[in-house]
Image 1 (cartoon, rainbow, N blue to C red):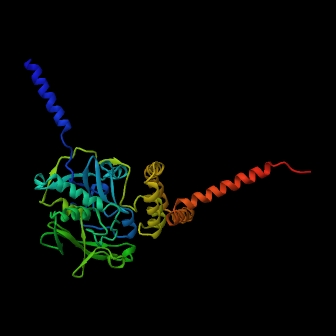
Image 2 (tube, rainbow, N blue to C red; image 1 turned 180 degrees about the horizontal axis):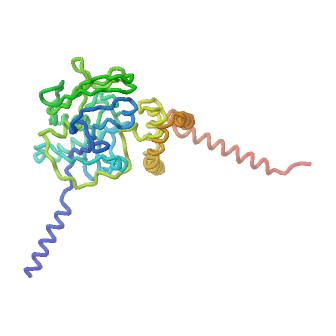
Length: 367
């Protein structure tokens, strides 16, 4: 009887452990970029030199997401803030390129948060879903456009919790300073020294880049340009690490490279091209909202990156791809401007015409 009681007790504890709450709602997830690099952790504070490098996900700033429970996350990716399965936090393609999970964190006083406060945090995050990604890093914390780290900082600030001090770091004390020599088409293949920094206690780090003014990249403060990097938020003492017991990698959804429009990004040379916006809008409105569309996207996101890399290496292929995309763009314009009913009416009329011509051809001929 005693043994039976011990066995039952052990079974109860095993069952209780298996049924224990998973990763806390409101936890902040972090991962590195390609090659397991992340700006601020590595010795050199280097930014991509050319616009082409930026277009091909060479920023290497890492990524941040907010866990909202039931193996779901909300994060800011191009083109919009989205809610998705937690397994899509690090897509398989990113895993293959060396992106690695850093861990999850929560505020140091998170045990004192009520369920209602956590619910409000998640509600605030959900209210931002669909808002544009801030591809110029001009308004990282919204309220109308966001970056990944800015989104998380914003929703916590709305509840009165500042993860990172809302300050600007120009260099030297309080972080690290590094001089990068740019030399590419952006600097006309001449040495262009720029001073980049990494803030350890403030949100925004100053940086210099030969394209910063012409592309209007970064926030402007007292004549300098600044950017909020995920690793700055990650190292703050206002948060503590927690165990991750939900899947956070190996999914098929991916952002940060033109919103998954790999072939079009390669063809046009930049995720900022206006045609990319049209394709993204079509994808979000028609493809992600249907089972057939999601199946197509899963297939496309798995096999198109290698084709996009081939296109990117050959100017002739880029030109041919732009021509091939013209009818696709035309179809997108029709559907986005008029809705699917006009296209349905067109095909219905075409089908009726085919049936009419077929019946007319079978009619008996008079002699």
